[in-house]
Amino acid sequence: MLLLSKKQDWLGNIRGDILAGLVVALALIPEAIAFSIIAGVDPKIGLYASFCIAVITAIVGGRPGMISAATGAMALLMVTLVKEHGLQYLLATTLLTGVIQIVAGYLKLGSLMRFVSRSVVTGFVNALAILIFMAQLPELMNVTWHVYAMTVAGLGIIYLFPYLPKIGKSVPSPLICIVVLSAIAIYLKLDIRTVGDMGELPDTLPIFLWPDVPLNFKTLEIILPYAIPLAMVGLLESLMTATIVDDLTDTNSDKNRECKGQGIANIGTGLLGGMAGCAMIGQSVINIKSGGRGRLSTLLAGIFLLIMIVFLGEWIKQIPMAALVAVMIMVSIGTFSWASLRDLKTHPMSANIIMIMTVVVVVWTHNLALGVFVGVLLASLFFANKISHFMYVESELNDANDTRTYHVVGQIFFNSSDKFIAAFDFKEAVEKIVVDLHRAHFWDITSVSALDKAVLKFRREGADVELIGLNEASATIIDRFGVHDKPEEIDKIMGGH
Image (tube, rainbow, N blue to C red; front, top):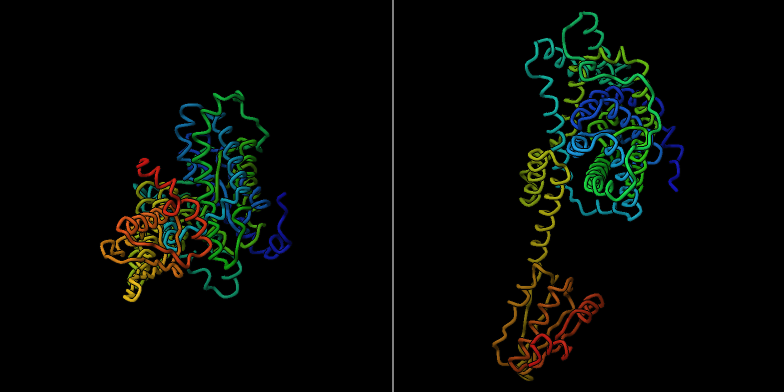
């Protein structure tokens, strides 16, 4: 059972969480509508999803203060499904996505975040900051000067308001930005794009809705190929966002619980007529920078969102998009790791390549999962290459008993096995070879095969070979997969001759 968090998570920062939740709710509206349009569904599908996912993850998620809702990364994966099969199959896919994510949580796949290096996380953050900024550009193209003036004024309010005495620190500046610019636009009757121009807001509460699809294998064949990538991308973005919020707040979170929480939220949104979603780095940063820290901020973001779109729709429609663009530009500036540019001079070249390639792949493909996969793959290759350099072999000859002793030091695995074999002189005419493995470790079947090859080559040259100093783990893998001390296995390899 997933239990409610301790009292501190809910009531430890009431005022900050209420104000932050209000700012996040306002910023969620245009994004949820935009992501619905991307997916090819009615705007209310994204808005209901954002409400539902935020509320459920606030209660059962593993990261207080993180905002989850409908996202662009998930919406892009739904386009073909909606076009070919319609909304009901999207809702069924959302339910299956949630089930897969819950299973991932119980399999403790959240622990795999340990394999994501700091360079990959930095690249992911920088790429998202760039994507968030790029997403605002359509709102700033082919528009009147009023939009630019409002956007600049909004940024001025966001960055300068906190310096005002007393009030500056007590109210989130993004909220002031939205309220002030909305008041100006309404008073001056400015002809600029508003939230209402994005799409029609729903005027009713969501209702329980079981997807109207046949429960058979044909349906599973249709939805499974979409549910698996949706679950993967959703978990990846959520876990990466949780890691970033961990850093911003200097706290830890339960990644496996987050997997389960995201899954329960997606099942909930599927039953209320919403699309699948996941954590949002942009909204999470808005929440943190507006003073939100606890689960209350996430819960209220969802509740405020629903109240606004259903009961205050006429007012919300009048919010100028320029105000929200200013907030999102602030998010992109705050999200980007500017220190990473300075660190390019001091960090190792491999770390810089990993970070830059992660950014390039994510920005180029708009696929967060692919960018992180490339980053993790590069990090693994660089690490394997680095570790292989620490493996070396020294030797000494004892003329008295005609024995050559090889001292092997370091890690023997797929990338260092060739170097291991090359360190031996198989043509030297000696009576006995001793291979000292006290300071060596064998990791995989490639390294075991390399040891077999070395021993058998020495024996072919007429030398007696003795292995000494194997640690228990190495001895276990060699005993299981090695053949140099198993005559019957050698006969099989040699074809029985």
